[in-house]
Length: 106
Image (cartoon, rainbow, N blue to C red):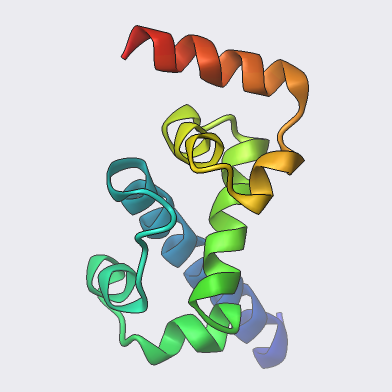
């Protein structure tokens, strides 16, 4: 494996780690309330690395929602739907029904 390939693999691994921390935070505090500082602290990185890996906190939030849709992370999606976030339009009807059932059990 070349140095460039190894560096790219490490970059992808680190990006996924940061995204996982952001998703966990979004479950408890809501995606809207994520800040560069809270994610950086949780991930044990400097805030500037969020910009390096994602281009900024708004792009990271977008990735959190996309990840949550793909993996059906209901606590995050329920918050996205409840505030009528622009990303709620990306959630299909079947998943919206699942989120509503989840909310009814809370």
